[in-house]
Image 1 (tube, helix red, strand yellow):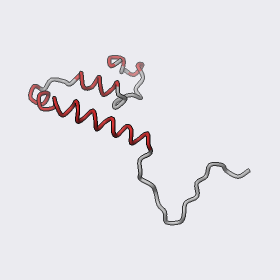
Image 2 (cartoon, one colour):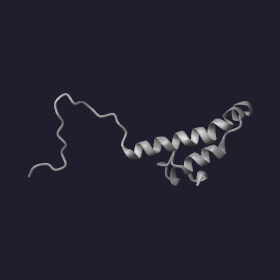
Image 3 (cartoon, one colour):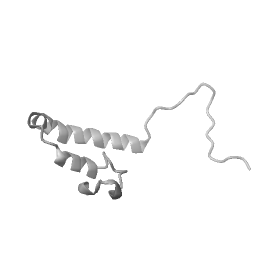
Image 4 (cartoon, helix red, strand yellow):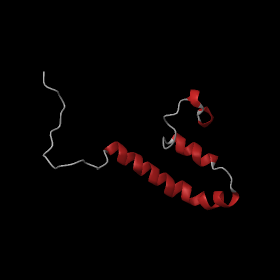
Length: 79
């Protein structure tokens, strides 16, 4: 039985480095978060040395960091 879902490319076509729609959405979310939230307070956190827990929590809620870490491995403080 022949393999299914095989995509044949022309020789020399190489790899496609274009992002898929899901990756583009993730990138847009990260960019928006950086522009609208992080940039506004980064200097203040830099001055005080305070840990930016509110930013970390929001980034986690958006799925930008540690979304793959289960509670059993210690991410329960973010939930």
